[in-house]
Length: 321
Image (tube, rainbow, N blue to C red; front, side, top):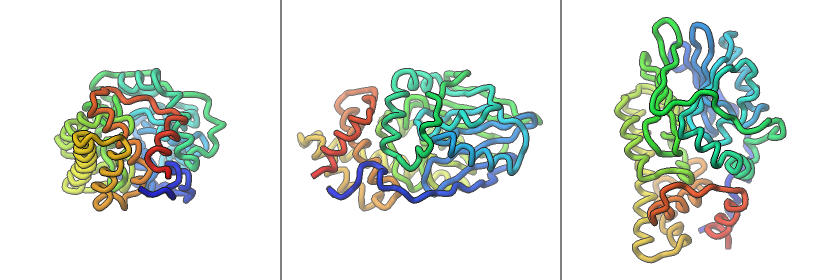
């Protein structure tokens, strides 16, 4: 355990310049080194966004990138799930007529949206530059239970699928079947710390199996570089599973040994650092991951709501002196 690790991502001040990357005809990723990724698909009559950015100020850069390739109206936003770093930039897109999310995501917003927003602003100060412009929580106007199809014109479609609980209770992937392109949200990460503080960790492996069954050929992870080719996509899915199984196994062993939450954290850190410790945001996510695994394995089905105060208290217990 290291007392010098600053709270969450408070010391992360290095600006990341997202890159526009064409992934398939009319489909693009807006890809950072390890900030949250987003993207868009250009249909015959409109542009569909896959997530936004943390603030309207940051979303305006995304908008400028979109306008570099198309002047079609941006009518629809798809929310892969609800964490503030992905959705609070929505108000920058004033042509939007529809915001689509799963029922699980809508429930998430209603029950913990404001607390999550306040928590994330404290965890990621760099990502919330211009936070004062945010007009309020981003609510969907259209919700679906398991699957929804957005026609793109010309016989193309974007399929939205809630494949199961995992990173959150409302995870949605956006699948472009004609090109084998999957926007995975934070269900899959690519060599970046896997945040499980709001997760259903035991369910997540099955959700990842459902993602793998799609056999994506191009995959936009929540964080990290785009995966190209079926083998690379499958490897990233497997690594995400390995991260989570190592977390659960170490915390389960600690609970069996009668250790406290602090003991669980020490064991998990020792078990996970050799393989995953060099991944971006690993140091940030691990305390929250261990706390959620500890709760879930002791029978607390639903993640406890994080608040700015609870964040700090946990950090002091696990990473303080």
